[in-house]
Length: 382
Image (cartoon, rainbow, N blue to C red; front, side, top):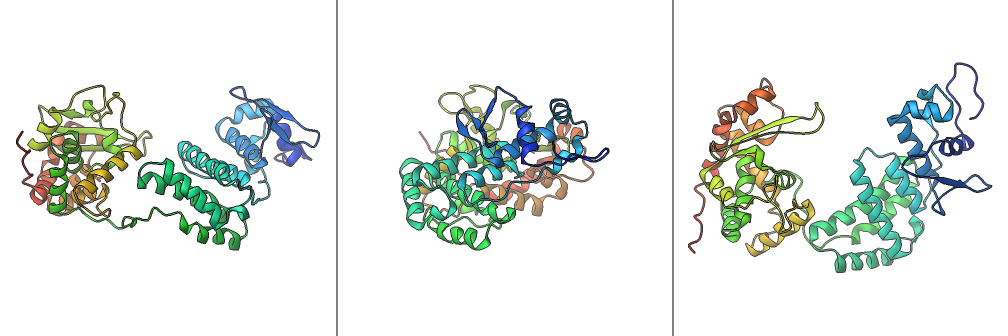
């Protein structure tokens, strides 16, 4: 494991890295080794950046396991495992991004899948192979196969994010910025939504409600504005959080204690009526025809179709509903803390259990939103 003096952390080199991987395996991952020391997994050469990232994750998550398998009790020093030299190979850049990026595991896997698709479509092996013509061929394939401008824009954004990560790991700035300039062709052709909050206007919101008619979209739009929810939060909305008889919404979102935030709202009569018209197919309020919860990207594309049917510009994003609700509640409610509770922000002096037991306290905030956007258009007569 390299030269090491007593009491000092082990010195890691490439031989030490390979030896560590040889002595550790999980989930059936078995490595074979060439004479030159490179690793193979299922017959495919494993990039050194991937090996580094895998060992580093093991060191952080399972230090006792690493100490046992390598015979090195002083695992604290192993976190300083030297990084492999940065490379312009797309495979190396992609695996390095996955190993040393604070994004969630799901986001990393999605980014890797998209870059792998870029490699397959363009045949590019290195960053310099991604010419403007290659990027246009990738764009043509995505435009033909991927539904919805929001999903396509997400694909393009992930490609730029992964390759732009090269700036953080010491790759040549001129080459990375040259790619980012060429990548400007990866654009859906529609105006991007504004970065600053843009509350939806009362007229535009009523136009959306009229376009939604009597279907589930009416309930979707009403509960989003009423409870100040983002499109992800509406996708994950569950029946146990709603008390239609009492007319309240209350839950705690977030998995870790630091991020657990109470949410509370009082439901408008129009919202209750719309929710009661939905069929229950499980714990989630809004489900597909198969009874499964909606995927966020799918619903973003569905909203884009509704917005087009309503004749509204693409700058009227779904997030405009949340911006409008919070703006109205924070300006009109006598206690701004309950506007923060409505929007899912931490409010000083309000304990989680108090919020969950007293969702009626959010009535003033919800009434302030209704005062700005109501009265709501009636359901069309059948």
